[in-house]
Image 1 (cartoon, helix red, strand yellow):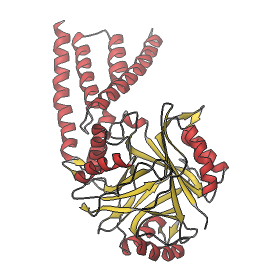
Image 2 (cartoon, chains in turn red, yellow):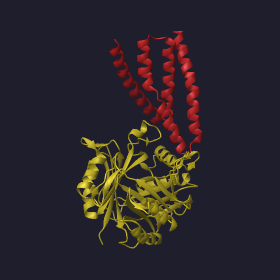
Image 3 (cartoon, chains in turn blue, orange):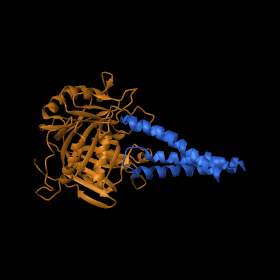
Image 4 (cartoon, rainbow over the protein chains, first blue to last red):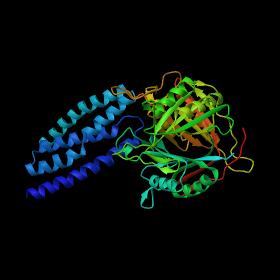
Length: 121
Length: 350
């Protein structure tokens, strides 16, 4: 049983990474402003989803698969930091701070919203 | 006097030729033909006729960086290679330009001096490229930018950068813009400074310096007397952290050219060291917020599209920036089997 769960985490982790890459690229190509909207959309939707799963109060195995496996590899802290640092390199100070502030504020709101929806079901 | 040609190709890093990456195949070809000098540069932003924007601002968009490869050797060898290279590129741009080898011909009014050094070449303990920039700055050059090659050939020998290596001899390219007089003064100094100097001189027109408009790019006809098309190249030298309306100038240029469709393509290269204007040569420091490195935006197109692009670029470089214009006598643009131009060199005196 546990072996099957770990294999499931690996597979869903891979799916999450590919989903993030595709969504980030699709969003980035459609936005005109030099702001990392792709990563923002990925992280906000991930926070909403993880909040939703938490609200559903899944079984430990399901929580591991959906939360750690899928959402864990779907969202990205490192890309968020790297892109913020790159904005700073090009002296885009306002955009760099906005990227942090907007992600934190909307991210918390998304997690709360997801949890509320999950709990209501 | 032997004539030399510079063959430049622009394409995306993940583009393949058969089973291999195109840049590897091209450098194997240059190595096999012992091309005198060639250098592979990775860009930070670009777009082409396919109208797909590449940028290193987002991680997902940066997994397929733009590549620019310059190669210089005698005319006969490069003309043959140009046909082979343009047949190998399935999507991208190939240009041929006439160059003079340092000191072999009278220098034109305004000139672009390109110096090729090795990554570990030193002068008095400091990197050779810094010593070269110091000389060029002292002589009053309008600007110089240093670009780190990741692969290339030097004096006909393949020099490829690898992770666990000191990368001795991997080519570094220094592009400088000055008057003919300044270039003539620089050559003997650089010859004593560098161990095995290799430099080329090209004719350019200085259009803008420090944001000040000196002359619009010369309006060239669409073709020469034999009907071979003429092309024109703009190079815009700015600092990575120089902003126009809150956006780095090079990003604004690419965005505006992309949106307005006034140019078929543009490529941005980031340097590691350099100067333009009166400030001292500079590069990255250990502790810094914004990077102090030069970036160069290259736009090659038909003369009428260059005139339209220059109007946009002129507006975006109102305070900073060095802009030059050059004649490009041959160009091949390939977009999925659709080919424009050819490798036959146009003749036009201006």
